[in-house]
Image (cartoon, rainbow, N blue to C red; front, side, top):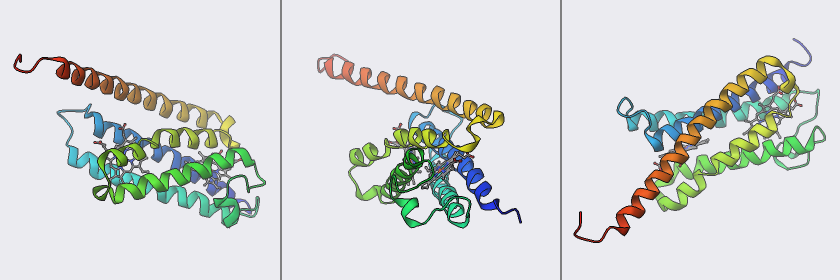
Length: 190
Ligand code: HEM
Ligand code: HEM
């Protein structure tokens, strides 16, 4: 076996984790905007979204576990969970550590979402967007950031993400304007 096999594995699983995280967020946007209506089914979207959320955690866990198995750079409990503890690229790795914590909070608050006030749960859930930015800053500081295939695929993912997010923001604003117009309309006139 190649002596750096775990190092390669951790980098490959990092990329997989990032793509799955992007798809999880995209699925969440499809769920809240229902932009595929009438072709979609909310129950199916939610089921897949929940499953993707778990998969994001599992692939990130694999990414972190592979780092422990590797002896090219040293990663133990401290380096995995304490920001700035890693001697290897402490700044970029810290963005990964912070993204991981936010992911855990988003996932576990969702598992108990029925017990939380909806606004609180949704506020916490919106942290998914900064979390994706943190994970992207972290990922783009990796060894493969200069690789053409990596750059092309990551640009495609980010373009789809930005487009869907824009649709989400525009729809949110339209709904707010509609609510304001409904409130302004005098009772009994419509
Ligand atoms: C890593 C895990 C997860 C991520 C990154 C994530 C991300 C997202 C994102 C970005 C949205 C769109 C939110 C918006 O723009 O308002 C969303 C919506 C949603 N997510 Fe997640 N999610 C995750 C896990 C889960 C889990 C485990 C559940 C349920 C058990 C869940 C349930 C929902 C629901 C119901 C919506 C629609 C929100 C609404 O109708 O108010 N999510 N998610
Ligand atoms: C949301 C969670 C995370 C995601 C989506 C993620 C994703 C990524 C991606 C895409 C890469 C680039 C791989 C490459 O260049 O070949 C990477 C590299 C890396 N990640 Fe993560 N990561 C996450 C969390 C973490 C955590 C918690 C740690 C450990 C403290 C960590 C440590 C590393 C290290 C050491 C590298 C290699 C950097 C290099 O190649 O110079 N990551 N990660």
